[in-house]
Image (cartoon, rainbow, N blue to C red; front, side, top):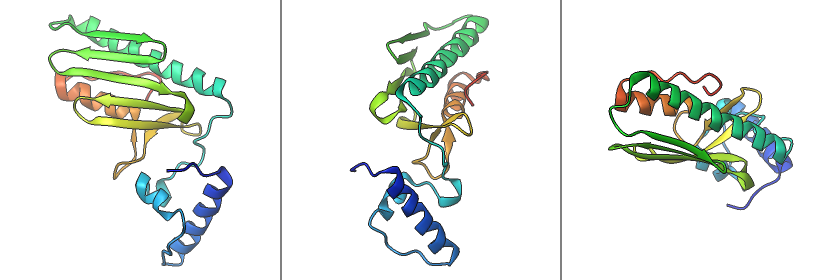
Length: 168
C-alpha cells in the first residue's frame, strides 16, 4: 500500500471518529487502511512515530538487547537441557530453541518497526508507541505487545515465566 502522509492519516482519523460517533461509517478513500491494520478506532495509538532515525535505532537496539539479556538469564538459570542459542548481531536477534524452531526479531529501519518471525505464530510487524514505551502488533483482532507475545510463546514451550524488564 502506498504510504500516506501524517496529515492525511490525521484527517482520516478525524473523519472516522466523527462518523463513528454519529453512528455511521462512510467509505473514505483510505478507509481500508484501518481495516487492513484491524485496529479499532478507540485502540489506535496516536504517537507511533520516531522523531529521528537515531531515536529509532536507540530504542530498537535497547529492546533487542533487553530481550537477549532476559532470555540468557532465563536459560542460564534453568540449566540448558537443550542447545539454546540466543545471538544479536547487526540489528538481528536470533533465538534458536531446538527442536521447537528459530525465532528472528530484526530491525526494519525504513518502516521503523521490529519484524518478528516465529515458528509458532508466524510473521509480525511491531510498531513503537512512544507514549506507552511499548512495541505493538496492531494487525490482530486485539492489540498485542512484543513482550507479551514472546512471554506467551516461551511459556507455551517451556512452562517458564520470562522476565522482561524493559519490554512489556
